[in-house]
Length: 457
Image (cartoon, rainbow, N blue to C red):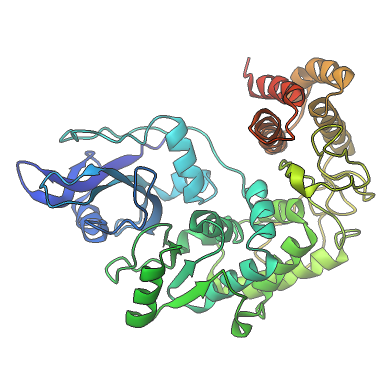
């Protein structure tokens, strides 16, 4: 497994420098990359947030062809005594193949590194950092996240930000939901092969020496005014309405608007997975048109809602929709529509069937075995019934899960397991939290499901 190199940029007094500088690197960081990291490193006052929770996730390409995924956090006070919090940036340097293993999604890399304990904030940074291996991979699309941003800031704003990203060298995003969620959503709106083009920061002051494509300004009103006054940046204020000039005209933003508006996120996730080869900026219009045609031609996609892992908040449930339970009888289950199997995307099954067409960036996949579709449908029903409190479904799932783990294709199994775990976590948090209408007893089945699905034995 390719090792990940690392570096730390912060304020410290070392044998070779004082103040903000590249305090330490691992042995594989080349000189050109080290100089680049020093130039892009955020120094005093660069972090927009205040307090211990302030942070920014950042991403950009390095001169060597590798990529830097970094996390900037507040780390106490400046050692020099000049006042203010110290910014601490840990940089992970990934080879292209390693980034591709995580679907070219820097947020997935950060999640994996944090889970592995690799994102360490050193009180005293050692002079030499070790490279490390990071196992795992990521799905092409974080479906739960797209479901979230499809609600807020909504399809119109997400399509407008995608349109702006294609039109402008730098897009600054202010207001609305947390900038990190919006930018992570935008990353997931593009094919994995295109994402490495999208440098970003989620919580740093804008600086010309850090020319990110996407910059999250959150609710920093003073920073909004500074950026608008001084720089040639497209500033989008998500507290307002999308500007008319950013209406989704290009095919790819139109596709994103359509998918988020209709809730066909699973459909998009599988199309993203199907894409093979490079996707250059000039490929996106043709690819967008092709997928729009496929979306319109797929039976039922105009009304299908994503059967995803995010439980509806209790206060939003006034009366149950068909196939759902109200908040008075238990957690809200993802909607079951009359389009049949939730894994089915078109007449051929989970993935698009082979058709004769002109060369395009979308690879043609073979039709899935109908038995696989049936097993996935059965698994869906058992998992959601069990989380809803059906004891018999839980017992059947306990017996069936080990067998399905051996039989189902790894990629499909992992995608489904990720969605189930996210849904179970959301139910657990909803029912075991502090909400006045919580039902702690309803959280126990979700905990059982989490234990079962995450058991690797």
